[in-house]
Length: 100
Image (cartoon, rainbow, N blue to C red; front, side, top):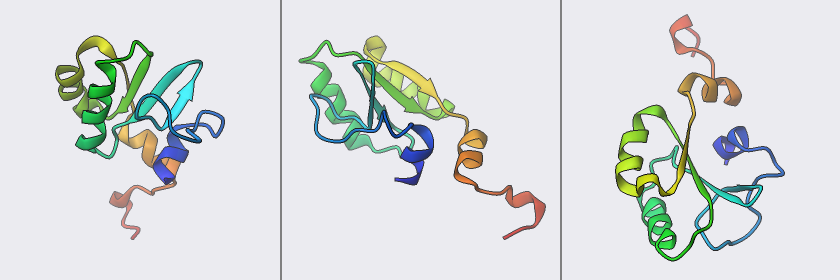
């Protein structure tokens, strides 16, 4: 929940069920966060996309992009999130400075 709050503004956050698996919605585009690597959610999204033309975006880390593109094809837009930017948004300190 903290990650979703850091990635999506409150007005984008999903408040109920939709026609596609999603965490947020912006201007008619359903947005799924794959930052947690939940394959079951990605599978449900792919199955739903077989029966829908609804615009969809997947938020992922750069190293997940190749897999998602090969699994979902060009049917979805991808938005990469940098790990350092996410850690900063979550208030996670750099562990290399010796702080616990």
